[in-house]
Image 1 (cartoon, one colour):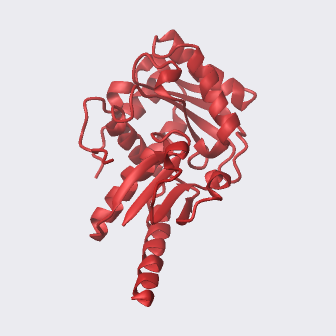
Image 2: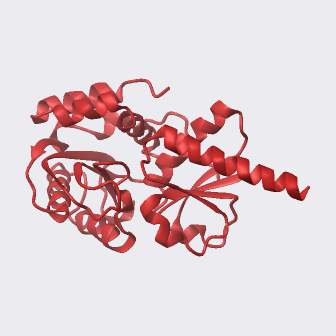
Image 3: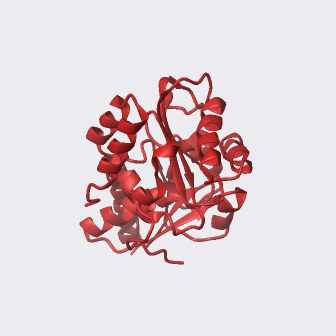
Length: 163
Length: 98
């Protein structure tokens, strides 16, 4: 099986919108963080509520490996768990919470990805990976104190050419 | 050479790793097939190298391929260093046997 990494029609700007981005939220636990970002996606019509419990189930069953870098978690479950539209929600936390990862805890950037199939989100994921691998973009994301500023940072960072 | 990137579902962390590894191999001029897989699908498949997130290690104990574990999945330097080490040691084993 070969998966094409050519540009596809759903880049980062196409899966993030202002309604699913929240800056500087206070939560007490990782479950509350998942519930918060999940509720944003439900309200925006991106996922069904079942997807929230599916994202939590993945963490319970497979462990906290989704904490992919220091302070950053990329939550997701399967398309059939209730994704209505391709989406990437983000909640930044005012107080980081532990997810149980051996080295990358505590987490202050909570991303939630909803994919409709295996390939449709690749360009967006690549932009996200490039953005998260860029210390300058990360510090801008962490410095944003309101939703509008955070969204602007994401879109401008996401437009940086991958190579 | 076949490199498998693994995660629980085959399109989150494993896809992110594949995208970085494709870039690294292209820059190094190394030819390899890089395939993102979920754990269930991977069972019974063959790969020379398996790359996964560090906290995924407990799911990889039965795997016979060389396993590369990454702590920071967006750190291109860590991914590149560990991957190229694994490729080099595979190549030297192959030349010892030949």
